Image (cartoon, rainbow, N blue to C red; front, side, top):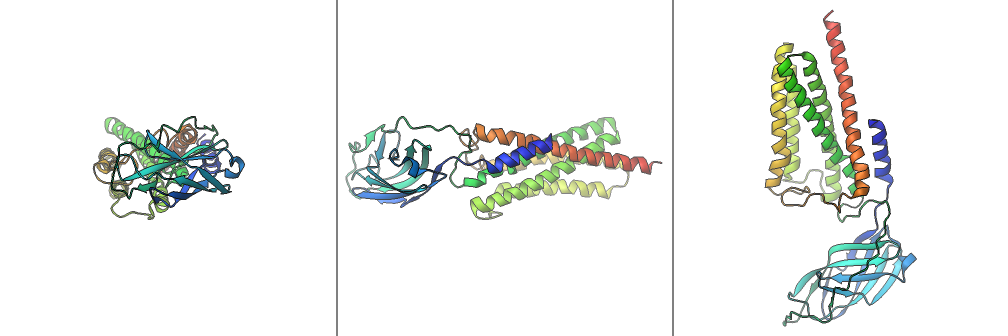
Length: 342
């Protein structure tokens, strides 16, 4: 079942297209009081198929927005929108605007803080009649089974099914190994220690795979395999080193009973150290990771139902694969012990 779920997550996770979105906006800064042409580059868009129904807005806030008065489609993924920018801006002289694009084929696409408007005039008014109140309504929603388009991430959003799911599988395996460690301390049975060792080994492997896939994601998203000062990566390295020391400790002890007790105690404290290293410290300092250092975590718009349909099976698949690997290691240890005891 684990292999089947992973095949499903690999196939759909890599082949399912992203929703249409806005890839780039040029220029990203214009001066008020003149006509400005803004070139929009789309992603997975079909501008030529709906050239007559395309609408583009520059949205200041929920009250004010400006609609393009002329649109020229160059190809399926490029168009030029012309705006008559009013001289005065409401309240502030420099404001970021969200670019909203909509047409019947692809539906609505949004690029937050796409264009910065700068007002040259000294006089600031609180009313700007040229900015229409609440003009954006009745946007076309196209319901297709596709993954969300997110700026910066783009196609790398698919790594969620590997990087994050591997981490969750690692946590499940480590929790199971801690349970076996507690059980061994109570029962003294070597089988419980072997199960703890096997699950810890599989969990550590998942942890390193999660670290490596995260480094690849960081290279394409942040421009470096290991961004300088990125606290969560540093804490992850520390946590995995702690678990590597678990195997060194086991190898340094010859007495099986002593090895089992000491290793079980160490495994419990290693897991106790894992929680603050991965989930507490990164939230207290600046971090690039979502949900850490003040950054928002994945929300409903980031992890929508189409992604959940692949993400959750991937988590279950990696976990089952880890359990299967651990069971093979457990049987090998038990067989070795049986042969040596003859």
